[in-house]
Image (cartoon, rainbow, N blue to C red; front, side, top):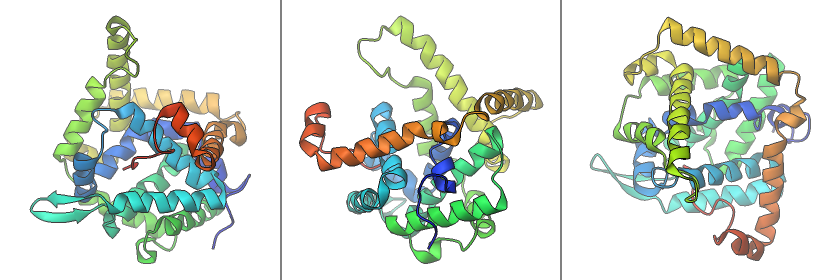
Length: 292
């Protein structure tokens, strides 16, 4: 067992770092590259029709099981497994389940890797001791979520080999194509927002999101998706990453993760006061629908 996720530990410092958001769409691409995850998103997710709500639900879920305390994390883990148990369907003539062990483990693995990659691109790479502590803590989160022990590599080096081998077997699929189209045509987050204001914002966010996806995906997988990447693109990304690094590095870790910790505590409180939550948002509870 690893140290609990408390102030100052590796998972506390890095999992909710605001720079992780730069990899939000990249990790979704990697998740739906798995055929079972792709089928589940296709059949059960409202990402294409309501990406903003899905994004908020995902953030709420992640914040709870990392920053919501042990009791909150266990409740959230049970909720996620109960919801995913209902996700079944047929893909390529075979039945699938939202609790398919390999797919379930893969989604967890992609989330584990995001903070490490975010620091590699936009901050300071984790030291060996930090990586050891971070990975051990995230393995404990995986166990809490129901990931099988045999699907949790024993250390970070083994985890990277597992991650690379999984990505090596992926290729483009229709869900990835639809994801890219959703990024380009995402509807405005509020109906009152005039189209003349939203359309240029939509085009700008699409350019930015697609650029970050191309910049941060594993190069070989990027090529298999048919995404072009030039030396000029690399120089642009290097300049962007350097700017983020200069601006963000002086910010204390507590400030870089404050938003996720606040969301986690708020959502734990909402779970204890469901009537308040329903009155505010007219839903059944934080993260009422699944995050995958």
